[in-house]
Image (cartoon, rainbow, N blue to C red; front, top):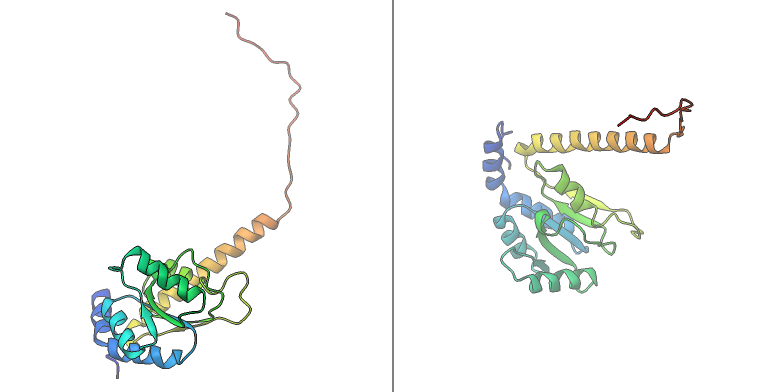
Length: 184
């Protein structure tokens, strides 16, 4: 079904293009009829997802800002159950607590991954959030990289919290010598 594990980034990208059909079919299967967001990377993925899931609304970069805003508002208000988008377009600043499911096609970018999944996992989310990562065999290195970056981010967050929550001692030094002013 999938090609052998790719070795270079170029091979990963090539293999990613070769497996669009299988990955998109899997994404639609995982979503079912749930309220969900498909996070894709390629225009071909977005177009195919739109064909495979006729109830999902595709957000394209070529759309007017007004059209994109209309789709996003309708999704946030529950009038649309599924949208197809890219993390670089809608991965930051939106609050979608009404949704707790997402299908994500990972890239090398931990930031895009983190920001995209945080659209659902916000204050006010009352349900567990499920994020299905859909990859082909050749994208194992992408998953490994995301996993390593996740571990580093968790460790950094822990160190920051430890330092912020540690006791603070304000040390002062008494200066008891007189000030010597320069003579002019």
